Structures are given as structure tokens and as C-alpha cells.
Length: 203
Image (cartoon, rainbow, N blue to C red; front, side, top):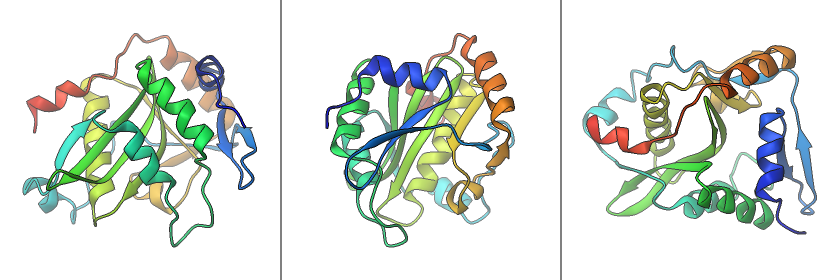
């Protein structure tokens, strides 16, 4: 299987579709109905997470090890069978990262990558792809700081694709595909940039 071109990835996202790999490596494109999104303005960290944030238990970095985050996300999980992040997917998104469209928010302890998330940024939209955690709360902290980045850069739409227990804890809701596509087109008209350096003002 060959990697997806960066043009095909970008065209897919702006039209509301995204790729996932099956166990045999075959890549399919998806446009869920309903679609899961996380309202950026209403997110609040859980009460149990606040002490972790206050103590600055993890070091936060942005785009320091994008491929490392992808490989962390692709590792087998006890609650899931297989992974949709194939080598071709990793290659495709790493190329997109090198063009400045894909980003990672990472958590470190003792200079070791222990959690993080990655996604795609186009104008006023951040398309969340996956997250992983090798230590308790590591991915939750990464998500918290992703929200801060999106707020400070005035993003208006955070797409999380499918609803599941993981995204529900962050306040995810489902909307009809038609409504999602309408919000998507409006958000794509906004000139926004994913600037991770804004975290320096709050860390």
C-alpha cells in the first residue's frame, strides 16, 4: 500500500471525510452521520485533573516528536483490537506535518514522551485524530493544552469524528452530518493558524 498524498488528505478534510486503515492495510474514507465534535468554549477540566495541572506534573511540548506521538497512538490497546493507524497512515500524516498542517501536543516526564495527541489544522478547524497515554492523565493533560491553543488562536470547530467514551469525557456531542458540513465550511473561511508558542504565556 502507498501513502496517501498530502493533497488528497487536505481535500478529504475540507470535504468532511477522513481515512482509516483496516487490519489488512486497506484504507477507507469515512464521513460519519452523526458527527462528533467537542465545543471549544464549553470544555472544562475535570475536578480530578485540576491538581495534576496545578502541580505541572508533566512537561508540555508542541510538535517536538510528531511521529513519536503517532506511533504511541498506533500501539495495541487492551480495550481495542487492532489499529487503524498503519505505516501508510503514519507516513501520510508525517508528510502533512512537515507541510505545517498536522500537529501534536505532547506530555513528557523525565524527558520521556508519555502521552499526547495529534490532528490536522486547516484555517478555523482542528480535526482531532488520536491520543495515547503511557501514564495516568498524560493524554488528558495534552488535551487540556490543545484546548488552550485552540482558544488562544480563535479556532471555532474541533472535530472528533466518532462518539465514544473517551471523547465524551471531554464534552463531545453529536451533530447531524449536514450541520457539521455547514459548520465546517464556515470555519474554513476563517484565517487561523495553529500556533503552539502561545502556551509559553501560560505554562
